[in-house]
Length: 325
Image 1 (cartoon, one colour):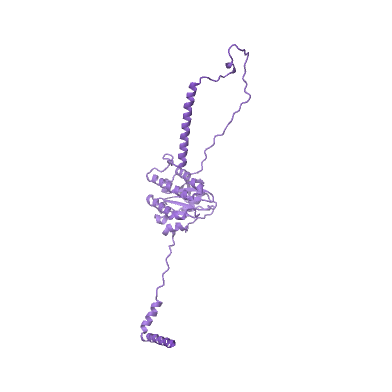
Image 2 (cartoon, rainbow, N blue to C red):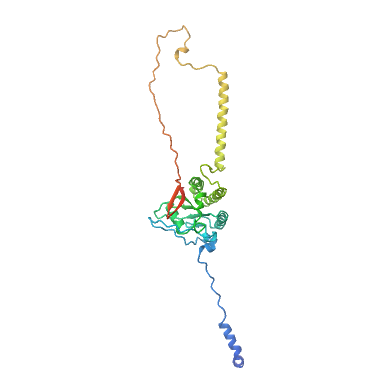
């Protein structure tokens, strides 16, 4: 019985196709012409999706230069989007979850002041000095804002050699003076010395914001306009200790003065002063010093851990400075 039904179904299908050939043809064509999902286009330039590029560290930067190479200056970028990403963590030091927030903060500064503040980490300078590698990196990757002047500042961290270096270019050279670099270096190197990479980034963000604000106001930090001291727990404890010490010394001085007023007895210079008059006769006296010592202590020289100034490379100039951490 089942075989009979199968034969009838087959004959009915064939008859349908024969009777309505256009329907069968259209169904076949519709199945053959069903659209295949188009592949998702990939963004080839990391600057087009800079936050994602920063988070994944998918960067196409040039980071290797020969030992005697000096890259020629090529200018900067037309806008912040093209200049991004501003955090280029080749050494993968920073917490990935914090990178998007930091990237946005740096972009906001770039949009506000027209100076791109970069942070770059790298493990190898390829036998170049930190400032030469930094200048090469800046020029080769066309960092900075404005195609002509490339305004920017850059902090470079090398965890392998323990180098921390800063460069300023264009208007960034005016915002980040050699004096300012010395102070910025002293602040940032403290957390980096403890391998607190995220802490170093936070200090840099705080300080570079202040530096750019001062530059915009026409008073960039310099010897004539020094960086104010920041109140920290350490400085507060030192201040408290000094205050207590000064107070203790002052109190001791007052008590000593009162004691001297009540005690009039004084030590005499010679032994004859302690002899009752007429009780003895001394025909002569002599005081002999057996030994005499003179001690000389060299005054320690103040060390300068940062070496800052102006650096020329590739046909352009930078403010430059830094040191070890």
